[in-house]
Amino acid sequence: MKRINLSLWQAAVSVIIAIGVGLIISYAWSNYYHSGLSLEEETGQKGEVHQSGYSYISPLLECADIHDIRQNDLEKKIKEVINKNIGQGNIIYASVYFRDLNNGPWIGINEQEKFTPASLLKVPLMIAYLKLAEEQSQILNDRITIENEVSNLSQNILPLKHVDSGQDYTIDDLIKYMIIYSDNGAAGALMQHMNPEYLNKIYRDLGIAAPNSDQMENFMNVKDYASFFRILYNASYLNREMSEKALEILSQSQFDKGLKAGIPANIAVSHKFGERVWLENKQLHDCGIIYLKQSPYLLCIMTRGDDFNKMGGAIRDLSATVYENFK
Image (tube, helix red, strand yellow):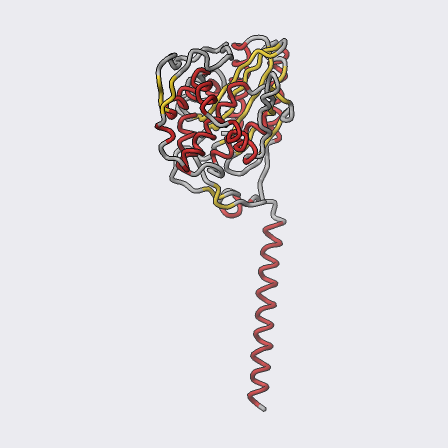
């Protein structure tokens, strides 16, 4: 009989302890939840956890739903710069997409407006070849001979280097000419060599509408295009080796009239620009990752205007504004 009472007493004590622990945890969580502090302020860590050890990618290991979004002032300043440049006649219209690559908060201004991406589409073409290289390791060493007419698209901003007709190049070299110098000749050769169905599959895999070959021009908004860079940064489609390779090539882009012009020269930028004359207006875009120490961010800007130099200046001003107010 005494044993039974002792057992009951021990069980009762266990229940009381369990209830007490539960109340303590509940109280602590309530204080945390209502404290008004962000996850970073409470724990000293960012809301998302990324794997370190790479130069250009940061694979996402853990995602949190609690974010301290304090971007209202930055959004206001971006709009002021856009309106100022419109007022000065530097641009007619602009779309901007900004994303904090540590925390995830983003700002979109006219982010659903469609532009012709032009040379920006060289990035998904590169992704397609690097995806093939994951399965066919030698494909980047395959050689392609440049034909006389591999691209019918003229360039208003001429590449500093270009491939030569009649010469043969490895696919790896052609990718570098296409991205670093934005050479249409290299892009045309790569496009001719690529199975269009495979390229369309890349777009479908990434959830982006594939360019329509039946149309005279392709169109894309700034938010959708920025997703290519997020996918590379997080190494969520290409493997880590190929994602790192892609962003390393993009960091060598020779275009310095847009995003790069608005930040200190010692900060790495993996980016791609695009330009096109379409209907009555010119279009100039620059999109990429700015590797600000401890706080990398994604910035994508698309503009319409009448003068490429002035449009480049507007992109520079927007880049400088984001840098100064986010660093």
